[in-house]
Image 1 (cartoon, rainbow, N blue to C red):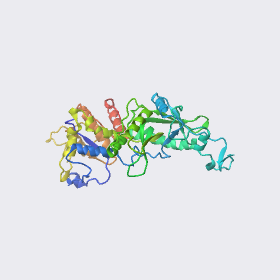
Image 2: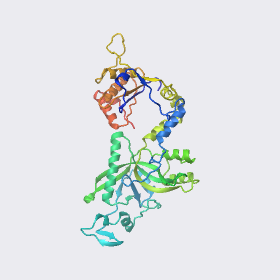
Image 3: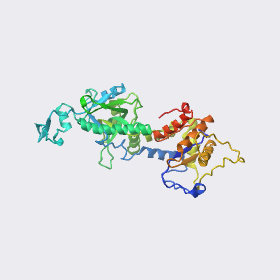
Image 4: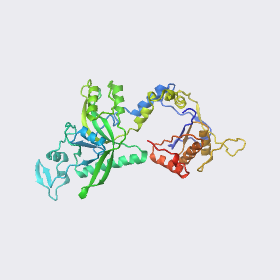
Amino acid sequence: MRGRSHVLISAFAPNMPSEETQHGTSDAPKISEEFSLGNVHTGLEKIRTRLLDLTARNKLLNFRHPKTSCLRFVDTALDTVFQHLMEGNAFTIEAVPEPDGVVRRSGDPHLLTDDAQEEDKIPAKDYAAELGWSTDFDLDSPDEPPRLRVLAYQDDLDRTAKKITTTARTSIEESGANMLYLCFGFLEWKDSETVQVSHAPLLIVPVTIDREKAPRNQGWAYQIQYSSEDLTTNLSLVEKMKRDFGVAVPYLREEDNPSSYADAVREAISSRPGWQVKNFLTLALLSFGKLLMFLDLDPTRWPAKARITDHSVIKNLFEGVKASSVTFPDEYPIDDEDLKMPVPRLFYDADSSQHSALIDALNGKNLVIEGPPGTGKSQSITNLIAAALLKGKSVLFIAEKLAALEVVYRRLDAIGLGLFCLEFA
């Protein structure tokens, strides 16, 4: 990585520098006290801690089972569902069947009449119990067949499942990241200073959800299937328990299933009174993007010959000296023959400032390039990648939004460089 330039190109909010300061100097920006200068290890640890979010706002530590954006399953067994998912089988979510013309008033069954109100319908949980379903969310039977049943009638299932499906699809389209997971088991824990009980998911399986018309006009059918991505340890939970309580929550092993992992967690929390593992099974929307960054910034995960703490950019970031002012680069008069500088080839139009930034980047300078929407950032990125490829360099281009990646790829493909692009997540 040494000797390579690093370029950050981003859209910015207001508070951009004035016309005068863009080509001169301005006051140095204030640096947050949370940002540690002078020590790479301390600085990285602070950043990693902030990425985790160990507060009660983190759904990986305090999942509240919101009725409108998650589905809780009953009358099944964790291990059998997990095994069938891992074998590639799909599950159709089962709603409580509609009662055959029966409502309940004052505890007695009556025939449903045309003027009966919707609120007179037997509650789904009560009717499921009459049908012989086990309605406890804490699944304690290992012998139930593999199925995904919810305590809701089809209309209610449609509303919640449609919202989940839309959100999951939007996440894939915008960021390329899956955020739909089936959570097997939860740790029920509480802080010794509070009485609030929190639930943290344990074994977390990435899944997909597909919607199709159900037969005989019975609403929609929703199918859940394992997405084939790696299973994930709840790193937020591991770090929270270690830092705040001295509890070593185990990492998920390749051979674990819900029962074996729950047993390992029970052993780890055995010294904490009131803590327990609940056998909940929940379809949830969760985000793990920052957790991957947390792992990437761990110095112990880097090879000895290329430690992140030795990287020149990282060292400059944490050990650099604060300047009294910030300077902004001047534009190169690229048509001035006296300069005799190598001017990179352009594949897309660029103004003088964009062309000057391209020259700096190819000369190995580290840059931050800002610009509001519509100012040619995608064109500049494409020109920079193409020029770097012409020099035989490798380029890593990252973006938070998948749409940004696709725009640059289409531009590169249009000039015949699509074959040099490899997409990965």
